[in-house]
Amino acid sequence: MRYAMAMDTSLCVGCADCVVACQTENNVPEGYCRDWIVENVDGTYPLLDLEIRSERCNHCEDTPCVRTCPTGASHVIEGGIVKVTHEECIGCGACIESCPYDARYFHPDGYVDKCTFCDHRVAAGDTTACVSVCPTHALTFGDLHDSESEISKLLATRKYKVLAEEAGTKPQLYFLT
Amino acid sequence: MKERLFTSGRNMLDIDPVLHAWHWEIPAYLFLGGLAAGLVFFSSFYYLRGKEDKMPIAVKVAPFVAPIAIIIGLIFLLLDLKHKLYFWQLYTTIRLDSPMSWGAWTLGIVMPLSIIWPLLYLDDLKKYFWNKNIIIYEIIDWLEGLINDFDFTKSLLGWLKENQKVIAWANIILSVILGVYTGILLSAFNARPLWNTAILGPLFLTSGISTAAATIMWMTNDHYERIRFSRIDLWLIAVELFLITHMFMGLTAGTQASAEAASLFMGGPYTAVFWIGVVAMGLLLPATLEIMELIGFKIPIAIPAFLILVGGALFRFVMVDAGQLSRYFFQ
Ligand code: SF4
Ligand code: SF4
Image (tube, rainbow over all chains, first blue to last red; front, side):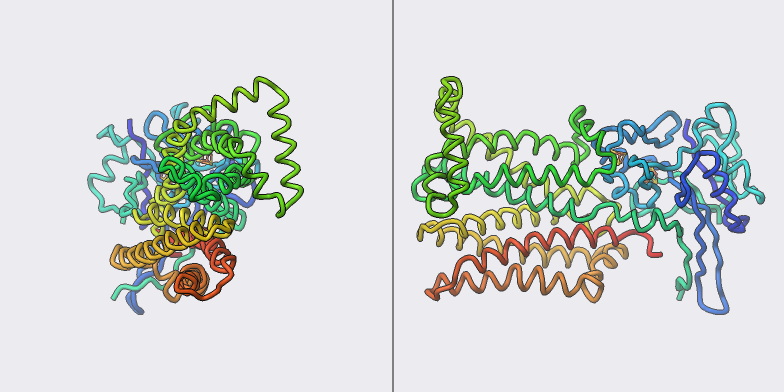
C-alpha cells in the first residue's frame, strides 16, 4: 500500500474548508494547523497565472524527518503514512528543521504534531477529513499501488507536479495542473 | 519572463514564527561542544607525544574546562527541548541516522571521561590556581582531600593514572567524533540549503579546535607553549578562511535555493554580522595581532584569544539562525 493525495489546483477555490475540517477532526489547538492554503500569482501582466493549493505534510517516500529524529518518535506506518508518537517525542525540533515543507509544528504541549493522513479514519475504511469536506472535490486520497483507485487513475491521465522536488524527499502530494 | 508576483503563504501566527525551531541554545551547545572537543584533543595528543612538560597548560590544566563546557552544553540542549520531561528518551535508543542521537550519546560518554583527566592532575591545577583564584584552589584542595580520604578512590585514581595511555587514546577518538558531530549536525538537514554543504562539518571542526587553541593560549604563561599555540591558531584561521571561501563558492554556484541561501550573506540580513563580526573581528584581526606578536610586538594575548572565542561563538549563532531562513520556498 502507498497512500498519497492528489490536489487539483484547477478546482481549488481556496475556501479553507479543508483547514477547518482538519482542525475540528484532529483537535488542532487554536492558532495552529496541519494543512493550509497557498496562493501564487505568476507571470507578467496581463498574462497572469493564479494557482491555489491546499498543502500539508507530503508523507514523503524518503523521510528526512524520520531519519533525523533521535528517539524514533517520528516513524512511518503502513501505507507510508508519517506519524509522531507524542510520548516518545522530546521536542528537539530536529524533524522540524529537516522538513523542506515546514509541515510540522510544536504543539503547545511540547511535542511535535503534523498531518496524519487521518489514519484513524482511513483504518476504519473512511477517507481523510479534508477530502471528505472539499466542496469542489479538489482533493483525492488513495492507494497508489491499487491501479483501480481514483488517485491512480487521476495521475495516469492528468498532468501533475510535486513541490520542491529538488529537496529529494520524494513527496507524495501530487498537484494536478 | 515568468515572475512570481504574489504568494500568500500559510499565515498561522502560532506556527510560522515558531518554525524557527532553534534559538540560542543550539549554537551555544555547538560552540561548547567544539571547544570541549578541542581541549580534550590537545591534552591527549600532546600527552601521547610525551610533551606533558613542554605543554603544561594544554595537557594538565586546560582540560578542566572541558567537563564544565560539556555539562553547560548538555543543560543548553535540555533547555532547547520543548518536551523536556521526556528527554531521557534520548538515551533509550541509539539511532545512527540521527546526528542528534549519536551526538547526545557521544556527549554522554565524553562527559564522565573528561572528568577523569583533570582528576589526574589535581596537583598541577592547584599550582595553577594558587595565586589566581583562591576559591577554585580551595575547591580542588577539598576534592583532593576527599579522594585521599578513601582507599577505594585513592587506588582507583592510581589505577587510572597507570592506564592514562588508554584513556588518552579513547579521548582522542571521542573528541574527534564530538568535534565532527558539532559540524555535521547542521549539514544533516538537507531541507535548509545553507546547511546542506559538506564543508560545514570540517569548518565547524576547525573552528572548534581553534577556539580550544585560543583558550590554551590565553591560559598559559609558558612562552614556548604560547608561541606554539599562536602558530597552531594561525594555521587553523587560514584553513577556516579557505573553507569559508569554498563554502560560498559552492553555494553561489549551486541550485537556486543554495544561491538564495548565500545571498543572505551577500547583501542579505546577515552580511554585516558575518563579514565584520565573524570574518574581520573573529578571524582576520586576531590573526593580524598574533602575527604581530610573533614578530616581536607586545600584544596582550587575551585580546586575540577573546576575539577568536567570540568570533567562534558568533559564527555558530549566525549559521544556525541564517540556516533556518534558507529554504526551498521563498514566500
Ligand atoms: S513533508 Fe515534511 S514532515 Fe511530511 S514526510 Fe515529508 S519531510 Fe516529513
Ligand atoms: S521533535 Fe520529536 S518527533 Fe521531532 S525529531 Fe525531535 S523527538 Fe523526533
